[in-house]
Length: 101
Image 1 (cartoon, rainbow, N blue to C red):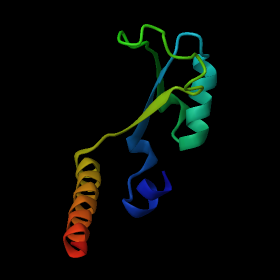
Image 2 (spheres, rainbow, N blue to C red; image 1 turned 180 degrees about the vertical axis):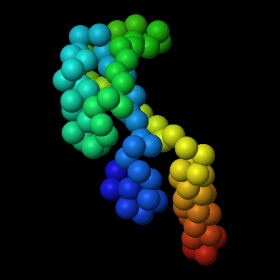
Image 3 (cartoon, rainbow, N blue to C red; image 1 turned 45 degrees about the vertical axis):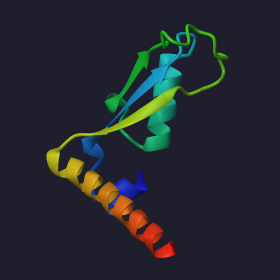
Image 4 (cartoon, rainbow, N blue to C red; image 1 turned 120 degrees about the vertical axis):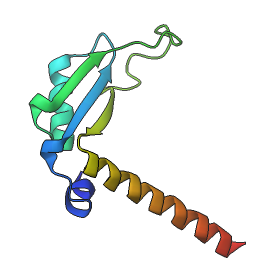
């Protein structure tokens, strides 16, 4: 989060979290956990209960104790900042690989 805020200069107001959890997990506890980890306002943390049809509950219940979180950033300029950074990383990795051959 510090990287997004300090390096890419994306405001926390533009960030939100979507957490996906198992049915037995506490919505309030998960929401509080992800708010503390990310620093995103509690109102911008949404929690969804979801079980994959493919797994049909076969996986252990404690496999992901805090669920999985998705960071979403709103705003066109912010989107292209992140996309440009990723593109630059990929090009840098490709160039490094060519140099090592």
